[in-house]
Picture: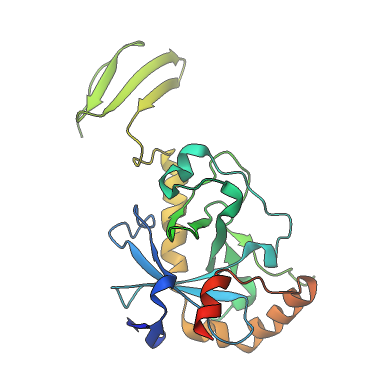
Length: 146
Length: 97
């Protein structure tokens, strides 16, 4: 069984309900929106869309940070992930939001300071702010050619 | 804005469950303790502002951006370095196919 989602950016989508995620606190700036679906673009792209379930206009591009930063293994402050009810923090899925400047995709950045953490067991997610780390909220995705 | 005068050791309460304690005042710095129930996010303001602004930017991404020639070429470079795409929700994918 799949459910239909309306997306302003991606059109009508048919989603496995198991891929619906709940963000009990929302995402900063979009706090009232609690439900999202993780959409795979279909090709071999390492990028996903995080599409708001009931808000067609809102969709983020997310990626697995390990694709471009193999040593990204931040430790999460305990109180930050309490909400996710996770037994073992290692089982959390970590994604990062990607900002793609219009017309200049080579200058895309990822927000390593505030990764999206998902507990796959209960499909609960949260944008965790790593206030104790030095990761940048604008980490370049691609090596700049010199 | 409500403005209150407090000394070190004194506190203010916000609602029933949030308490802000002035721990120390030294020169132009104030040390503050915040007691709040779980689920209330407490951050340095400038940090949260940064994340809010970046999230607004990230939400502007257009589907075309992922189709653009440059970004596809760049993916290939990334994939060469990190082969083997990880299945995020592998259990579900089995159901789908």
